[in-house]
Image (tube, rainbow, N blue to C red; front, side, top):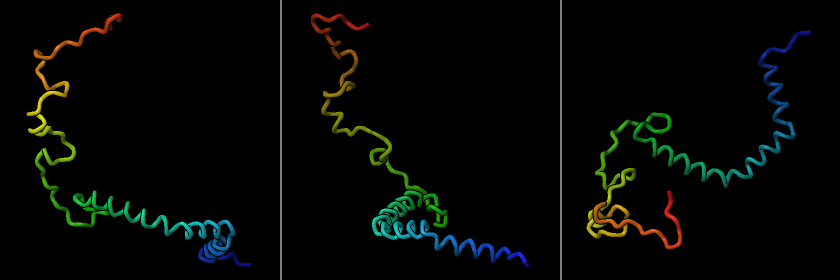
Amino acid sequence: MQEPSLGEQIWEVLVTSLFDPAFLIKALVLLAVMPIIWPAMKLIWEELNAALAPEGGVFGRRERTAVPKRPPSEDPWISVPLASHRSRGGGGAFSQPAARRKAPSPARGRRPRR
């Protein structure tokens, strides 16, 4: 008796696994939740691809463009106080020079912290 070839062995495993009841249940569950998962996955993919666009996208196929330089007031990663906030004064711990700031008075009946 001749032993089956590698192709025949692969075909046998593929056919037996496709008609396995556990595989069929998994495939049906996946098909049932696909209308819910697909739009979410599409949004995640588009956002990730847009975020990586300056470096060439997810797979690096797009034409690389230079990242535009923004002034510090428009850059989302740099916090620069606006002039209108500085001119108001007061309200913040650093709004007055250290010489003009009053030292907090200790509360009555309590010992100062060490």
